[in-house]
Length: 471
Image 1 (cartoon, rainbow, N blue to C red):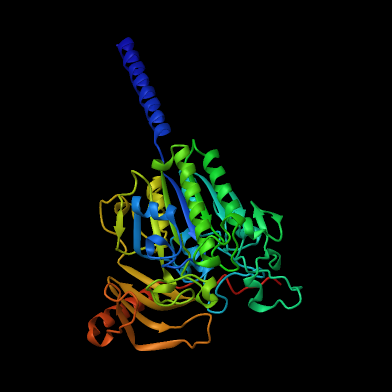
Image 2 (cartoon, one colour; image 1 turned 60 degrees about the vertical axis):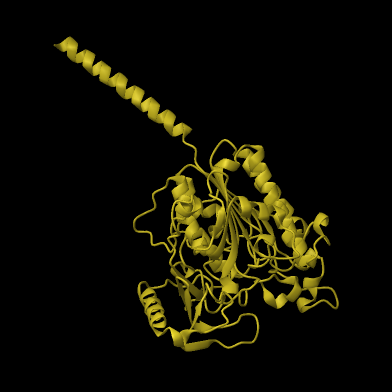
């Protein structure tokens, strides 16, 4: 009996060992989906050929839009840089994270705040699944060491820590002042640095080469990590003014300097995809391309286009917060045009799903998983979009209807206007927000007004991170 028991026990140990080895082998062979998010700065809804621009050539992006998904009703978390970026990386509206303000809309070189370490970023989510993570480009979520990407889940960082028009030189050449310097091709007017990880390696940054250098860095990262899963966040500094391109793209676009910049970004996207294809990673990688907000219209021909949408950067009309969006991944993304709502807020839960990461139950998100739409297996989970300007809720969209409770046009002398009753638009019929139909749909106005009130009452916003200055 003892001998028989020993044999049985030995057999069980062998079976357990085989099972464990098989499980380990399976774990090693599980292929994770890589993710590359490409985030432009101030690119408008109407700035790409695949979104209707007649004079800017974007062949690389046009190809991705055909072979992947083109989202026509895709929103950012805010209509200016800092809060928009916070929303993308955390999946939470900036009002929840303290990354918005009614006084200072974005972070500046004298700002003392940044994205709180308590917030979970996409990079931190992906690290849990063993991904290599890298941030390349504009950060704008805090330039002090404790707020840099390397403290927010990214293994490496290379880029300009805030907007490329900040840190202007005070000793400008004679006759140069105000907007004059935006029309020159002299990057020495700005004293913005380039940071590598947490060390300043260049000041002022040579912005004529910045798009090319961002691109080269991303392509190198892909090559270096071809045998392990990776998440790369490429946040272009362009087409935020001042506009710069490398020599190869200067004077090439029918759209002038702004078109040159967009066409170099299109080249950049093409290089990234070619690198993925070179290492047989294109079918294992989701590429997301979008913009942080609408175009900076006050810069006229040096700003972009909202297409048929109303207004641009800095306001809560559609032109400020609806942006071009493309999802690409052969075998991962079912090609087509998606007219349902989506948002950069949805990218964190989508990435978590692709990485196989369970998110904490106590984490309140404003985004939802888009993978069913990407795979062609279901509808978008997004039914509602909240439009904040600073710390105030200006508008709400549910289904086709959008109600504006407050409006204000940014960057020009213009008062804040409160609307009672709210303005109401059917965005499926009237995406340009021309025809106020509030009088015809009082029940819709009532529903959206109650929805806004319920949302505001559902949480207490933390103190803003944007107002404090370095002493």
